[in-house]
Amino acid sequence: MRVLMFGWEFPPHIAGGLGTACYGMTRGLARNGVEVTFVMPRAYGDEDRRFVHVVNASDVEALYNMTDGGADDILKKMSFIHIDSNMVPYISPEEYASYHEEYVKSGRKVWSTTDVWKQRYTFSGKYGANLMEEVARYAVVAAQVAKELEGKFDVIHAHDWLTYFAGIAAKRVSGKPLVVHMHATEYDRSGENINTQTYAIERAGMHAADMVIAVSNLTRNIVIEKYGVPADRVVTVHNAVRFAENSAAAPERGVKDKIVTFLGRITYQKGPDYFVEAAAKVLKRVPNVRFVMAGSGDMMNHVIRRVARLGIADRFHFTGFLRGEDVHKMFQLSDVYIMPSVSEPFGISPLEAMRSNVPVIISKQSGVAEVLDYAVKVDYWDVDAMADAIYGLITYPALSKMFAEKGLEEVTGLKWNNAAAKIKAVYEQAIERKK
Image 1 (tube, one colour):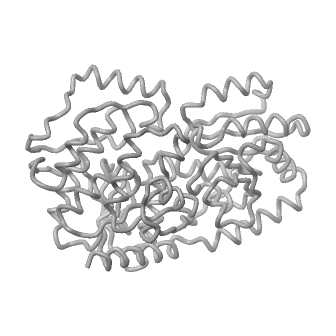
Image 2 (spheres, one colour; image 1 turned 30 degrees about the vertical axis):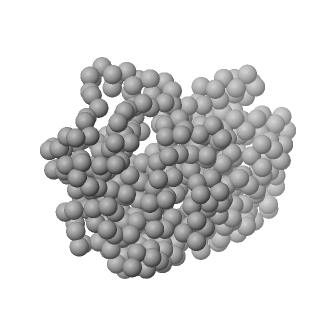
């Protein structure tokens, strides 16, 4: 089986769990006899290509008439560029202002939908102020790629809303079945105060798809209830974790204090403010604890100010965004990992922490809670329960050891090969529906 896959990021250049999931998934699919051509806006050349053929959309010359099939309806809907802070969830308002100012100064104009696209478009592959322009042009390139690869793939797979228009365009050109993967909905990112344009893209993608993959039952229910997708077309496939081929030796610790780590985007969805409140409660009972917040996001300044007001700044460390081996080192240095997400479709980071033999605390409002028995589960808003869980794991060695050992044993069974086998079955279902 051959798959034409559209994604927005791929390791080592990632902004979050999406790229990590795509990497593990493509490796797992390869081991299940599936050939994957992975198209991304911008490839850097240092991606691991042993299990996947990577196509750099920035290298594709899209000689494509925008009014002639494929992307025409899509482009008509993208006739203006207006991005607000909700549209770019991976950058802070300060970064957004900078991106937007740079974009305005460039004097670039929105192209006409009657134009013929005659040149390459260099994608940033990031989440900047012209994100929607990139999403639309990516759809044009996707149609061109699908035309060039005609007869060389059996199914199309698009990851998250950024690539849904690309998937739709490729389906229109090729007639092949489309599978879309919902890693996070707009309701996860924004609560009930959703960005209607993002929601519309998500809905269009899922309704155009032959099958929808949700990363958890939590996400599947949102897809069915909030987007009106028929239940028989939505399948849950939980994410997995990949064990490093060569695990480096644990870094040397410079402190004797216990270390409790939060790793993720510092934004509303991830619940960083609840982590801070729980930390303050723990420090009233146990002073020799250090709390690490690894990540970046729009709530960073708010969190720093709150830490200062609580008088715990000397116990708090902000590392900024970590990736690759630095993430693994941070887990190795940690005594407890906590993911207090307000809404988490899945959440790969707890699996990565457990893989490093670290006990974890997760919110009950996360998809990963569906597959883990040996994680302490609390409501994200219950900072007292969160503080009690942290206190228990850093104070009672036997408890910590039990969760670490059982957790490692449990996470070892969550393999991408198994998840990929389920995804392959979804492909087969989509192909069958198309007949």
